Length: 204
Image (cartoon, rainbow, N blue to C red; front, side, top):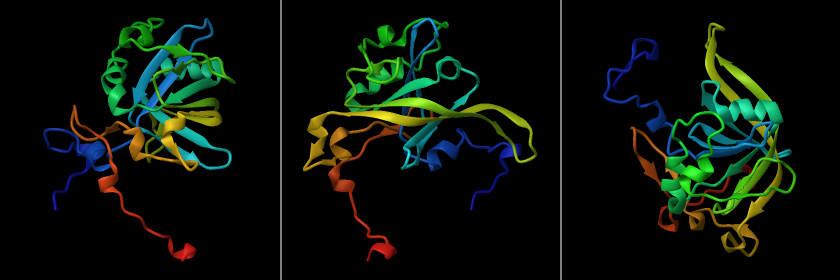
């Protein structure tokens, strides 16, 4: 077994942490500042944390525009990043000056949301409109504050392309989600050939 203590460094060409915890769904987060200027950025530390009410969240290394905007307006939109949108999604990861529009840079269309002021990515087949529930600064085990911020939002509206619903059931593989893996460039997706089903013991 290869062993290391993260506080001493991993001694490998690339940190294996986010390769082991992967592939990961991408938090493609759209927001707007108080002046209505749009921002769009991908976060690979992202997931869903609760059913009722539905709560999703992403972590940002540093106090970036997305976090600033969301704390300011208390709203954001998550957009599904698909294989077809992967290059555009990657373009939105560029470090741009505050107020510069990632939608324009990536050639994407901002669409009006129903319940929040933050825009949706029109080209994305799934969008979650969210209202901020918590913004938490992370801390190490000894209590030292870390320059990372966990943003949690309640999903208040959902948009799904009807082509992804079969008999009312969402088809995960059909959406061809782009999933972040290890190393500086690796991504994956899924298809039905990789599917297997398990029934939980309590449901047998």
